[in-house]
Length: 463
Ligand code: ARG
Image (cartoon, rainbow, N blue to C red):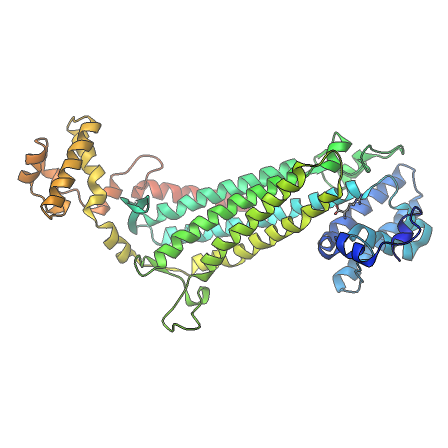
């Protein structure tokens, strides 16, 4: 059964090459459940509005359930003779029910049907993705909690900056992931709108009851403008933008971990189960999961650029270009699920080397700011203090000494405000301890952050 069934307009069915070029069934079949869910709601509404007989709606719903089971069992033939999932299901319905099945597409177009399906699909998958992101947040929090006192050098410009708690570093990513969840749930709010009832472009002359369908499919709102409803994919752009930002954050975390596992850093190592070897070099243990995750970011960005480009030149309303909206979206979702299927346990099973971290943080230069701030306590304006400590750093370099090897007398020769305490502040533990403002890396503050997140997850679990 080819195009002939679908339109009396054509004398011959499409060429084989055309069917293969224009089909979307090879990928939109993943929407079958949502397509069926939408068709059932639509059929019930048609009956309740008196547009089709109750008996037809009942038969349609029963048959749709059967089709759903058959698809799930693999007992359903997909063919490029039929363009998409909508045509496949309707064809089966008509095959089984004849005229009754032929009533299901009343007052509906594939234009409003396809964006209904994508919206139903996305509102489900976004919740699933957010659950996985939360699992990753929990893994990061567990590691932070288990290594609360571990100190490592914080970097700016990838140069030693100031000592920070490892927990503070990991909790930074927990914050980023929280915003990723926020962006996804925000996008979900805007896409959770019923488009069905818009028809091909202009609505319908039949007395449909959109409110009925809205309630049936549990949408908080319905589209106000039928042209907007069938033409717009900005909701897909938003989801892909949110997934792209998430991937960017994962890529940065991956980059940190890859650096940390290098021999030069040796701050941590992944479990053997979450690394791979080399086919040639027997000694190798590589952070491939982090690398692949970093690499997959490009793919997700690609899908975002693709949908933005697809939409930018389209006159209202539906154009077939829009069929290209799905592959990239599905690929991005699969990619993100893939990353999230390994990342949380990779984090849970990694081993931190706190001694090695501390050793790296023991560079007295990391405490130069603390020295300047000590001068501020003595009444020196900060800019001058910065200058004076800079001069001390130069003095140390010229005399081949580390900052903590400089005596009080030497310090006084550079700035007279020097005190005994200023020669004794070159300890990373002390530098961390003293940073006690809200949001800073001090032990007490990081303890507060940990308490915040634990409470947050208790609440999320309750709701
Ligand atoms: N396969 C199409 C898509 O994915 C469904 C909508 C087709 N509409 C049309 N007028 N040809 O966009």
